[in-house]
Length: 387
Image (cartoon, rainbow, N blue to C red; front, side):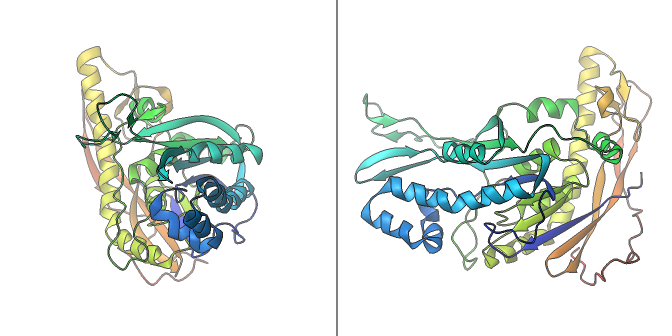
């Protein structure tokens, strides 16, 4: 089926502690992962922003170091509160840190410190998600092993903090239509809205030599994509104030949402551009796989428990609930530069050919006809095509 969706993606090479380019109440969702205080790989970054941090490290004063690092993050949280619209969510992936100072091993609770500040500035805190990263390490414990009072519990999870600005969002009639088209499948809902995620692997954080700094704050694409599907509707704008390698923007493009990114390190911006060169085919493949997974779910359900009651009105495949009847898949078809820091994405549709058999699976194909791929009246001249 054809689609009328278009999204825009703006990257600001600037410090997110002052997002002057963004108006108050101008974004719908924040999805981000900041540098983790008290993790050694980030010491130099925090120290460059506040030389007092390097001094506290040299003097072995971890609590002072912890406080100064979070003092650098607090203005970013203040800014996201300002730019979020009423009813908008912020999802912050953060891990605690374990570290030894002066021969003493301890835990530094980054998630608790950030939550405390978010509540102080007016956010409503909602149930968080524990992201437990799978590990294959056979000797993953910390400490002396089998002797009592000599080992430490492993730290194998991170937090996804979820907060909201004000009360529930109110949707205009047009937003209500887009919200229905943005629905997720019943079986996805049961996984996404669990408070413990165990099915997403951690992202490799080592960057290539010469990329600017040794690691990025990259989180997995699936984590960002899932949060965007959960808390934004098509056409919404998603902000990542710690843009890094652009994972949130790639996820937003795939989900049919616009995005804004702030990144202080230009080397990471170049790496993200390289990632984008190969991203379009992966985006299309993910959307096809998502639909195929639902078709398999429908076949399995009907084989075990009988016919599903509802059909999607656009494609005709079976769904579990009435709320899934309006789901539309928008397939990214072309990414183009509007300016050096502004990307526009056009979308095509997915064609589905099913049968009337109760257990139908159907065939998913890409619909190559794209909505008006030429330059639009009044739109900027987009000369550089990414894909």
